[in-house]
Image 1 (cartoon, rainbow, N blue to C red):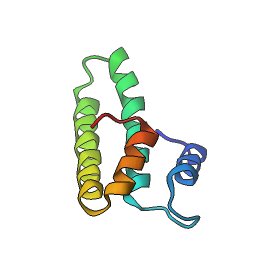
Image 2 (cartoon, rainbow, N blue to C red):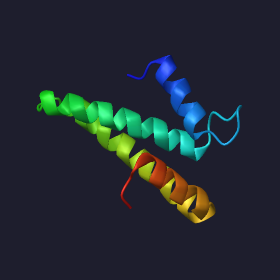
Image 3 (cartoon, rainbow, N blue to C red):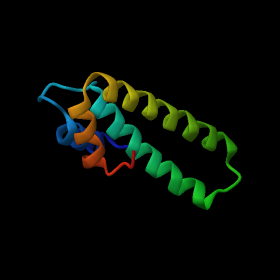
Length: 88
């Protein structure tokens, strides 16, 4: 789980403007952080299939946001990929 401080830090780093809370870039960044934490959890708890299913849903959701960004805003897509160090 992400704390409120972690979320606000991610929002400040990736937001387009100061009141931005729901842009695709922020959603991708938040999902990436959640995916990283859940991946660490699943390394310890290999048989936790309920969390694994949630992880797959988050990965699919992040991919959907990235496809949208790539189609609509290619420059913003490349900057978020570089900023989050995602390989595409």
